Image (tube, rainbow, N blue to C red; front, side, top):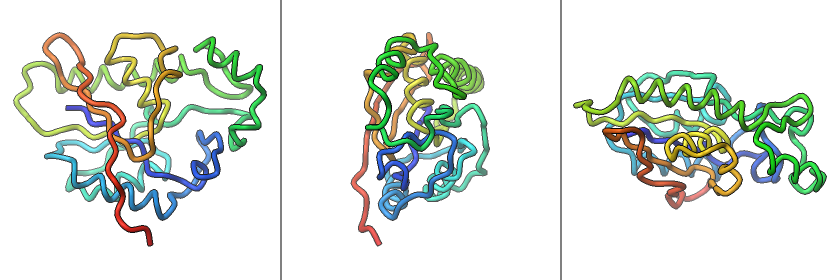
Amino acid sequence: MLVLVRHGETEGNAARQLLGRRESPLTARGRSEATALAAVLGPVSRLVSSPLRRARDTAGALGLDVPLEIDERWIEVDYGELEGRPLGDVPADLWRRWRADPAFRPPGGESLAEVGVRVRAACDELFARRGAGARDEADVVVVSHVSPIKAAVAWALGTGDEVVWRLQLATASITRIGWGADGPVLHGYNATVPPGPVS
């Protein structure tokens, strides 16, 4: 099973900012969310993470006894000049263009179609290594971000990148994609675990 984990809540998430490549630390709630996920993970053979600190910190909080592998393809979308802006400050006409065209690239940033290309390549590689007939039952866990995880779901469903706007994904959520005989199979999406006490 490919288990996709979105990182825990960050200060940027809590402030409702567009958070792409900029580093933003996990909040106390985000650390608690990440720690809570460990209880719902089964045996794990590999742990892969985006290079961004919030993903690596979430991966570390899972407490898995496997080496952490960094894969740049799982990094968040580059928002370019929109990076760090509050969601409410993005002009309405820009939102309309963005939602209508997966190839739309914010100034200095990256399009959702470009995210889809790199994530599909990463998924194809994982699928080829663990594809149909694999006897090892241990999961591959990938800790990433909202846009790459949605792109992976589009890959699993065989849809275009425009579907990402119709998907909601919570922080510290789990999405599961199985290794089907004829291709990937979506087993679960956006599952969350109540965090423990926040200190």
